[in-house]
Each structure stands twice: as C-alpha cells, then as structure tokens.
Image (tube, rainbow, N blue to C red; front, side, top):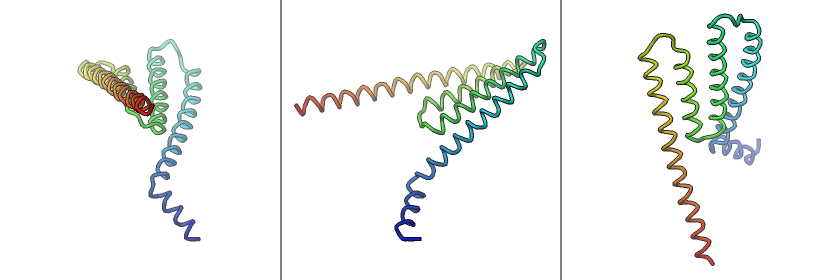
Length: 146
C-alpha cells in the first residue's frame, strides 16, 4: 500500500466522511426494513377480521410504526431540528393513540405533544429570523459594493 493511499484512507476515517457514509447505509437499511415491514403488514391486514376493534388498533399501530421508520431514515439523512421534532411527535402520538385506560398517561402524552409543537414553532420562528438577517446582510453587501 502506498503512502498516498494510506493517507487517503486516514483522511477518510478521520474527517467524518466514513460516519456520513455509515449513516447513509443505516438509512438505507431502515428504509429497506420499512418496505419489508410494510409488505408484511399489507399481507396481515388482508388476513384479519375487520369486525373486531382490535383489527383497527392493529392497523393504527402498524401505520404509526411505518411512519416512525420513515422519519428515522429522514433523520439519518438530514440534520435539522424539524425532523427530530417530527420523529418525537410520531413516537408520542403512537403511544397516545394506543393507550387503553390510562388517563394520566394520556394527559402526559398530550402535554408532550403540546411541548413538541411549541418547540417546533419556536424553532421555525428563530430559523426564519436568522434567514431574514442573513438575506439582509447579503443584500446590504451587494448594495455596498455598487
């Protein structure tokens, strides 16, 4: 192995590129798992009796689990707080929807969702403000150069 090749490998491993590639691989595996899980779920939905309430709960549970898997893959591919908040919202929503008779857990779930959506609103507002400031600096920079 030449020195040039070993230097490239060292740079690849230390610069974080290998971690980004690993995250892409994990996202691909997650999407593949979601697809397989979705196909199995479709088959199971054709086999259950729709006269029972448990069938509806089964369908809701599976749909929310698929949504969580998709959001997890999105989180691995894009680093933004909005994706994290959406993933957490799906996890909490799944827990709240599938509760049976636990009123305290229901209230805590609703409170958690409220906090998540408030955080999302604040983060969206702050990001919008930062973008406006950045755009005005760019615009002022262009005007000053003229």
